[in-house]
Length: 499
Image (cartoon, rainbow, N blue to C red; front, side):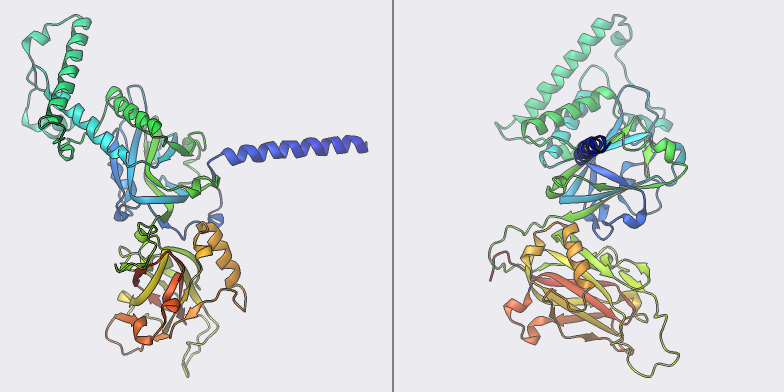
């Protein structure tokens, strides 16, 4: 009996090992409980106000695909009912390379148009843009070549009320033989290619094609979308940057669960994937349907990371586009906004906490030094030298904190870790009475009740801080005892080498 148990334990161990190895191959896993989501602090890199845009979509007939990128009440992307072979898909171009940690899918307001399945792929290759522009140009030129005038679907729909009729060659109407029609189409395609080549080579090797004037279509048939898809895939394979799957098509059957929940959260499960930056995202709907919103939580890779000396160029170290990200926060009862919004120039409301529940009936002394601590920790995208802070209380003129405290930390070893590892370190440190992190505390910034202005400037150079003291990879901001902040800006220069 004892031997049987030992054998069973061995088999169970082998089985669990196989399962764990299989789980590691899954690019991401669904998080059922919203309280277990650990990437909400990070920036939504897919947001349109960060510069993300749709560069190709197979169908935009019912509701525009760009709606999935905006944070408003517009219905998201809804496609036609697919009648030919294939499926609907789109490609999103990110303004800056990004590392992605989590995905949020929302299906509100489209219960009758939910796609049964979808998958998400990513790649890191800026040449995708040029391939799409070139292929769209060829398709547009093809439509102009031949013995009759053609109209794109856009033109037919937009001019339906103008009684516009397509001009056809009378000889073409009499053609009955399918082979003749096929040969005619092949000749037309050859003429298109020659025409494009002639335009490109009109001045020797100099290309003068203006792809920006390409006509954008609402729909592509299978053959046209396949040509573009094939050209992109060939390019990515040649340059060894193929599409990498983040979300598998069989992860969820959305039609079966749409009545139970509208929002899904997925955490990137493969550690290798959160070490790589991506420039393009592909969303596949199988076979058609729609999705309301898509959020990708992560960080932008700073364009200034390669600097190795003190740069004279001043930048906003706090901007998400420059790599700044909220790592950790502890705030009592936030009722408006989010701490990560105070570094985002497009989120002017910042955040605000509720009033202290245990405040005395009559204020006899300042509440600044109470035990309540509302603090947020941000990491810069680079190691920087801070010159000044600007604080805007904006709409919180009568809800401002009594005191704002700012701290700086210079720890390049922590900055090189991924966001989740940094988050864990700061969470553990903030629980300690005696902090292990060697924060440099700046003079407290007090705001009086009779202040008429809402914008405040805090210059570190006026306080004679040394270069070492102003060098930082992270900063922490605390408000006492409660209140709100609209925006904070950190202005400085970039430094990558040790001082």
